[in-house]
Amino acid sequence: MENNEDTRVRFAPSPTGQLHVGSLRTALYNYLFAKKTGGKMLLRIEDTDQKRFVPGAVESLIKWLRWSGIAWDEGVFVDPEKIKNHKSEIVESKNYEGVLEAGNFGPYIQSERLDIYRKYAKQLVAEGKAYYCFCEPQRLEKMREDQTKNGKSPMYDRFCLTNLKEEEINENLKKECPHTIRLKIPRDEAVVFEDVIRGKVSFSTNTIDDQVILKSDGFPTYHLASVVDDYEMKISHVIRGEEWLPSTPKHVLLYRAFGWEVPMFAHLPLLLNTEKKKLSKRQGDVAVEDYVEKGYLKEALVNFVALLGWNPGKGKTQEIFSVEELIEEFELSKVHKAGAVFDLKKLDWINGQYIKKMSADKLYVQTLPFFERKEFFMKAPEECKNEEYLKKVLAIEQERLLKLSDVGEENKFFFNDIFVYDVGLLAWKDMGMDKVEENLKVAKNLLDGISGNDWTRESVAKILLEAAGENRGEFLWPLRVALTGEQRSPSPSDVAWVVGKEECLRRIDRALALMK
Image 1 (tube, rainbow, N blue to C red):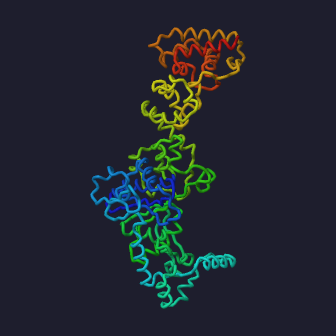
Image 2 (spheres, rainbow, N blue to C red):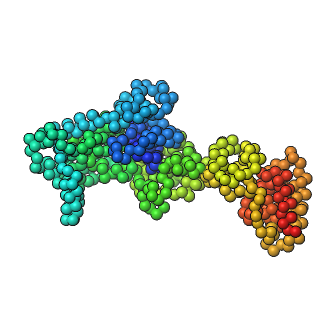
């Protein structure tokens, strides 16, 4: 794909809550496409639906987009450092304290562009392509009920278009009667457009309602605002979710009404749960911060989201990608049409791969907050909370750790020595208790003979394995239970290395005492 500086894409979320993983994917694909083509990406805030507005949502959206590593070129920002060298003028948002706007096509917040939308809506009325509608909500509701009863799809009946004369319209406007502006949809035509992902798409205008483009409160609907903004901001490619596909013919008709060139559309597949139903908040966590809270790494979540509906194709089996590799491989033509299943097991696996590659220092820093939320950790002796000790625990857990929040959960014996177990558990299969006692005493003497400097993971393992010989089960099983109280755990040599010589000997003595 050749670089094209005229390529301009946008991510345009509504500030109605947290950043959805589906929105993260949309933002990511826009970002990857812009980077791959040498184009620009902008962040626009679509806040015209004031009923759904959530205070603080704009700042939260920006925070989590930045956290993900997605960097846009213009639009809305909160960190002055990110745009201090921006080539355009930087202005403060009129509607959001602490929010900045940078770029040559602002404002980038729709609630700051109301006069622009009203101008364009009235232009369409003046050209006979749109009309005023004074119908009250009660009339519209009864109209829809009657249409539904008669087996018809609810659509506006064009009462105000066909029954109101110009004098009545002007009089109503003069009286400031509540009204909307509707687009006059042509009948018996086909709206055909090319979707980069889905190919040729066609809709009959007879199935399209005379949509409201300007609401009675003076705010535009999504349809008018997005089309006007995309035109004025010179957007070349509209990359968005499949749920907007039914609205696209309305947008194409708006472009035609204004006489503007239609951008390229690319509608991304739906995100589905494992039951093949649309991913929703009612069925589980869908916000990016929910997954961060659970201990998923940024790199893993971005990698996983990138694969929800896209893969490099051509028989490539690679599943772990850096952002640089994603940019290199990404093409809209490789995005699938079918819905993408949000498989948590796949996310866990990808997250585990990234955890395995982390340095000891980074893993310690990132897991410490998760340790500090756990009751067993907070109640543990102070010597079990220091950095050196935790790094040993993490060295044992790292290979199998899937989420940062899982730290310590399967190995609480590292933080608590008052575990309870049935003394019979010390025996391997049908071995007698005399043999159990003998093997524990041998193990104790061997461990006691290791000097402080030689107490390493490798040396402890070597000494115990050599002593076990071919009878590993009989020798190592009693030691495992003595040190952990569990049937399943890391190897007894690993546990011994972590808890240290003194604690190791004490736990063996406790097991021997239980046998008397």
